[in-house]
Structure formats: C-alpha cells, structure tokens
Length: 472
Image 1 (tube, one colour):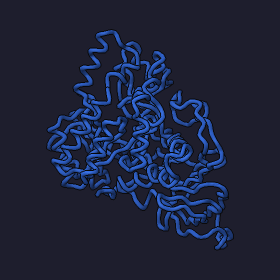
Image 2 (cartoon, helix red, strand yellow):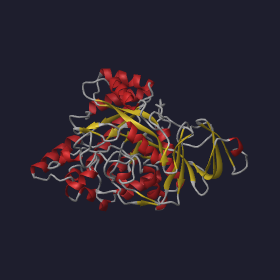
Image 3 (cartoon, one colour):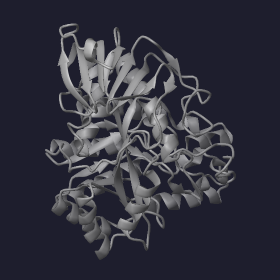
Image 4 (cartoon, helix red, strand yellow):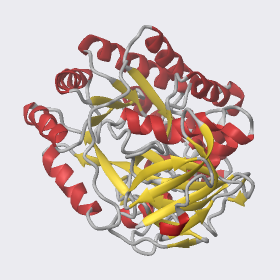
C-alpha cells in the first residue's frame, strides 16, 4: 500500500522542511518538495497535512502495563494502554518485564512477552526489572541481551520488594559493562525513606501528602550520587529513571561534565504538577507516585526544564502506571487501598496518552524549547538511547513509517471524559493544550484518523533492541 502525506512541515530532531512524504508498505521511501512529484496518482491513500507538523511517532520508554504492585495491578492492559498511547501520538512503548525474588529473569521475560503478544496496538519492546541478582540472573542478563532486552532496571527504593543492595548493583553493573547493556536506576534511598514513613505513621500523619514529605528530594540526590559512583567504578552505562529533583539533576550534570555515560529522563508529572497536588485529603492519592511530586516553590520544575534545554536531561517518558481512584470493575480497590495509611496507596499515575501534547505545550507553546527539541526528547533520543534508531525516531528513507500529523493550531482540553486510558481520572483534568494529535500511522498503517481508531489488538510487533546508540 502506498500512502502520501502532502503539504505538511516535516520536523525531525535536526530539520524543519516543507515536504511530501511517500510511504510504501511499512517504510518511508521518499521525501520531496511539495508537489514536485506526482505521487498521488499511484497512491492508495493521500493525507493532507497542510498547516500541520509531520513528526516521527512518539516513543515512551517507561511504561508499566499490567504491573502487579501494592496489592493490585496497573489498570491498563497491553491492549488498552497501547491503544491509548496511539491516541496520544505514541507509536512505540518500551515496557518493563519483571523478575521478582526467587524467580528466573528469563521466566519473567517470557511471562511479559505472553501478556503483550497479540494485544498491542503499536510496536513494543521490553526492559527487564532484575529484582534478584544472583549467579543465575547474571547469566540470564547475557541471554536477555540476545533476545533484544538490552537494559536492566534496578531499585534503590522499595526494600523487601524490588530493592537491591549496593553489592548487588555492582555485580549487575559489572555484567552490563561486559555485555554492552545499560543499567536503569530508580534512585531513592529506600532504607532511609522507610524510617521516615514509619515515623510519620506513628505520629498519625496518614494523608497522601505525607507520601511526598517522607520522600524528600535530598534522598533522591544521595541515591543518584551513589548510583553514579558505582557506575564509575564498574564502567557501566547508567540511565536514571523518572528524575524529579534538582539535587539529582545536579549529580547527573556533574557526571556528564566529567565525560561519563550517565543519562536521565524526567516525566510530565514532574514538569507540570507539584507536592500541593497531594493535598486536599485523600483526593491527593491520585498523585501518589515515586519519586513524589516536588514543592513548587523549591525550583525543581524550572531546573528540570533547564536540564532538557541543555541536554543534561535527554528524554521525557511517562512512568505510566495507572490505578483507579474509585474501585475498578474487575481489579477492585486500587488507590483506596491506602485510605488511612498513605504507605499502602499504589504508587503510579496515568500519562501515556497526553505526553506528546503536554510536552508540546510546556516546551514549544510556552517558549522553553523549539519544535526540533520537542521531537528529540519525545522520539529521537529514546530511539537512540535504547537501540531502535533509525528504524524508529525519525522520518527518513528506510525508517519505519511511524508518523504523527500534529495540528499546532487546534487546542484540546485534557479530561478523563475523553481519554482512552483505562483509569477513572486524569492528572491533568481541564488543562488546555495548544496543539493536538490529528492522524497517527504505525508502520505505514493509519490507526488514528478523523477522531476514530482504525487499528486492532496485535497490530504491534515485538522489537528486538540493540544496545544504546547514545553512548559518549
């Protein structure tokens, strides 16, 4: 099938140009000056992108579909979550397969492959959460790299669940240095946080806002520093996930200035929301995530935007991990598991659908970043960082035709009434964004057009990722 996208402004991480795009099957096969070739005559479909931006599909490298956590499961399945991602202009997700204590990493990978197989609306890959570092796991890390899983997430938080000791982190980092994979780190000092949590509960401080107060930013900065120095010791590439705090970003910036392979992402919730959103009694449970939202007056948000401008932060992903505020019809009680005890609120927020439009607002709409940088942090660098470029992350001859037609002149109001995520609230309810997703193609097939979904479960394919293409 041949498709022509005509009359739009093609935007990549480095270029803006008026161009028509010719797609044959699943690939981009040509770009040319508008009207310079009579492609329409031989095409099966013509998309008029006049007055609109034609950008590479978004890549969200941090999602948690169907994740068991806190006594329940994330409310989005691979089917509902990947479809919602498509509605928002994201055409690739990289989710997390999970190894828990006492189980095999390969078994965890295979279980998550079964969850996703035949269900995803868009292409997908996996990172691996390695929750039990032992001799067998270290061998399996090599096996997983061969399967296209080239990044391994570890936790300095959640003692008794996913937590790894410094010694276990060193072992995994040594293996990553050998096989070329990247260590992803949830950098919060979980041991210290647990003390603060128990002290707060003992004082009767049970509301959601204390989730944020007991996870202070200094403990994210401390853990980030420690992770970086362990990476320096072992020579492993390090990627800090969901960075929220100025102290943590300062550590990443210093390491990068030293020439280390240290990278970091942040998320929309840290760029737009704040600790105060955790107030208002139990309503604040909607905003419980870890690391927590930070106090607005402490300057964290503008520091994060500055980091995106200077490339000390490379990526905006979502950490999409939704739990319903009211009871879910199938999964039952979710956020309200923590009524009377904030430490029992499932940690996570919905975000995979509005990411592209939110970051367009904060970056381009509010004049912080240009449109090329918006594409870079939401699509191109995620592809390079996690071994998918140039198959994904750009519009170029030979690349997959994962393309979004984005209308910068049609605003949209974000609301749970209109979103497609399987969760009963929006963290950005009522926010108006200045531009909106118009049409979405996944490997050359139109899946969103005219405010309708034209895809199906199973359209998405598993992506065997290479090692990072972004190392210094």
